[in-house]
Image (cartoon, rainbow, N blue to C red; front, side):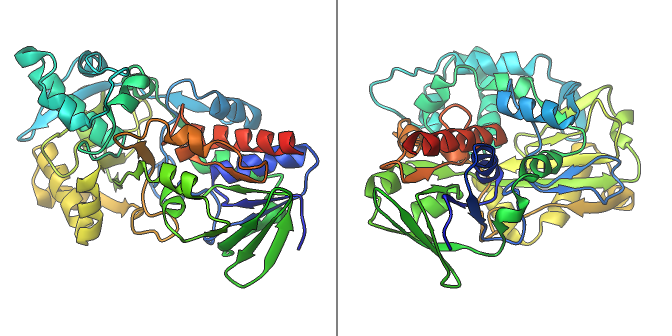
Length: 418
């Protein structure tokens, strides 16, 4: 089977690349290993929550120009996240005040021009800000572990410092009213007939003038270029064999780390948290298995979400007890009896991204010494072999925005090579 461009992966990056190429008059084939499109976007619309339930990507962070442009194009409304941050200790809630400013005070001590990179844990070990910022350092560790889905002993200080203040994106978060899958549906609209579900790519045989991709059924696809938009861990191992090999790109991919999350949604029969404190948006529980909870504020919905990131999330999802733990922790967070919470809980929804054989994690972050890895992955090889996906975007890695931007960039690289 012959086409102009083969795209491996039908997540946000692959769909965006295909859309741009089709609009430029190019023929494409999209090979997707799973039985659905969207990658790490997965939205449920059939619960009693009153709002879409996001099992994957949930927020639009910061300015996100590609995402906002597509939302406007599709006439999809978004709502800004509002409300106050609280901390729960022994079931008692205390308002945390300007939490982003508090965390930002710690981030200001990081240095992007360090001669030698180090981990975020090593940075915190120097006690930046001294005793007066002890509470802020605890908040910041929880933020990096949760927001970045990171192991704080592995994530790069330089990568965080180069972002400026990482809280800016979190403090300007929005939700898509109809859910993230509505955005994916819009992007795939013009390319849905070119998608081959359950067709994982196994071999990529390439040279300067053309490429041949062989899927798990032995079917061969030939094109002038291929865009590879697979999750990070597929780039790190030999799930897809490249002939000739790409050692420099594999090495760059291994300087990045796939993060893990436990993202659990509970549909309740009533919004009991509105009786506990005013205007609740986020509840921080830094010493507990789930280190943050959130409501749908400013929307009044019966949905409450528990979140854990980093190594503790992997332990939780592998434990086989996550439903039990989330109900126990919800009761503890709000100082309620477990039996009361169980009566109020209508349904629990989550997806094991780390156990998903097609994903093997949530999203990427930069490991120590890896600040130049994403730019390496973003370079086209001989105009034939091109990589996209959130891990390849230096500006917005770990986000749908990064995936969309990388897909658009990959399409431009194809057009330039043609």
